[in-house]
Length: 168
Image (cartoon, rainbow, N blue to C red; front, top):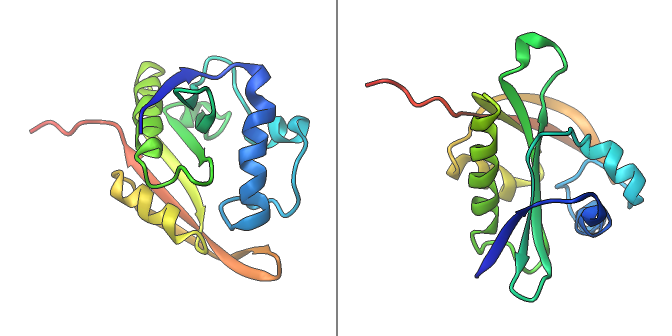
């Protein structure tokens, strides 16, 4: 599918929240149990000025997905580490859009001096775990049974990707 990637602008947050809310209600891709307002969405996503936020749009302007990076921690020791979030509009998954968004975010990360990207994924969201692993992330930890959504307990899977190219 042909899509255009662009830097997100604040007035797109409501549309982004709509995509997010689908996953709130129909999956374990989010940890939130009830749909969120655009204001609450902003708080959850923790947008940071100067950090990459990317949207993917179809040729007719429909937002097909979005992704962002945010600092892993405000502590200076972790200044080279980011956390990723990415959501694809239902009906548009499996078309390579997530991979394109990830590549754009990785490019933005390198410009910021980021060397490591982390993802935290529900163990009940196997499709996301597989996507991250296929994209070069590796499972580096698991927090057993710490999450509960809709009465189901889940692990939080910690995935890590290094952006540093090893010297041969």
